[in-house]
Length: 135
Image (cartoon, rainbow, N blue to C red; front, top):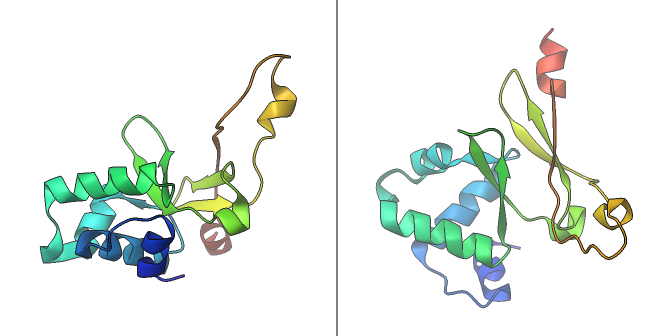
């Protein structure tokens, strides 16, 4: 689906910022930081609209936030049809790339009786294939 179709599927207005934001994430294989996205937006970047756009896209489940450490957060499109809401992420310690990967934790199986899990995050750290091939 293109950006306009994705926004329409969630009942969101098709603003220039939202379309550009989604297009940037769609053309990149790895998750991007806010700075990466700002850089690609160039002159179309507006700080307040940018942060409102992030929040709207997060709230509508079009994108998800990946927390790498206390300083680094990356964003990726939700690929619900491929990975489901709870999927894993791979962080390359050499190139700092983050890739969504199939599979995650079946949190319901891990919780004690009476608990109900809603979200889980799994971040695997290591060396990606591209960096490993360079060794």
